[in-house]
Length: 258
Ligand code: DAK
Image 1 (cartoon, rainbow, N blue to C red):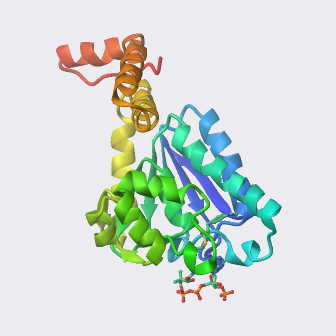
Image 2 (image 1 turned 180 degrees about the vertical axis):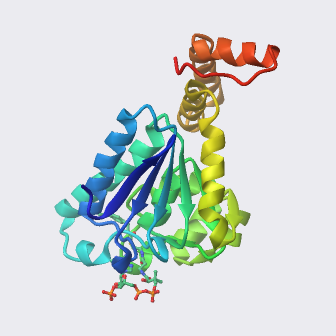
């Protein structure tokens, strides 16, 4: 069904793989359109509790497609940027956890895709960067905003102004990734984490994502109130009763997903 991506479901996990290895998985408008369609599938599928995003071959994603962008005028560039924003924001706002398993180059739009995910696990061979200023543009899929929120304004400016490529250890040191593992252990580590998250109460995980992502840009008072509302949703769920009963009865919970 898809030509530039692969989407598979195994158990409770969705696997979204960018699959244009000849162009190091560069994001063109076709890839973005297919990602948007796959995200609709993911959103509609209750069986999918967590999603792993990765790249085929030696790259995660080496950026937006430079060959395609080189031909765009301002209007077309804006349309592509909006298609990219839609994908990144859908991942960010969907109340399901997304884990980026960063297997190689995560540059430009690739770094932005990884940053839109909830958690980033990197292979020790992965490389990160925002090289756009070397091409006469700036990060266009929300990188100027997400990078500064993840690593701080000063480090975001350092990386974006210099276009420097950093390795996985440095990405870990500055807080751009949460874990670095050997290449052979990447998928196993991402799957273990995804399965752990999938074993928790789905409504609680969803509300935690809503509270963290939406509260991050609010003042503390408003964000605290958002947390109250998110917690109230949890207390209104059968899974809150089940989770606490299971603890008290010393058994594993059986989530009702409501
Ligand atoms: N776009 C298109 N093709 C790419 C590509 C990319 N981003 N990255 C690699 N490729 C292609 C190469 O052209 C090459 O194709 P062939 O020559 O074989 O046909 C193939 O992938 C293999 O690449 P290399 O031969 O270069 O492989 P190496 O291992 O030697 O080098 C590399 C790997 C990742 C260091 C190198 O490929 C590289 O520097 N790639 C470009 C990285 C980059 O600059 N990425 C940032 C792209 S800019 C906006 C929308 C979005 C954005 C901004 C604005 N609006 C619409 C306003 C975001 C922009 C970006 O992401």
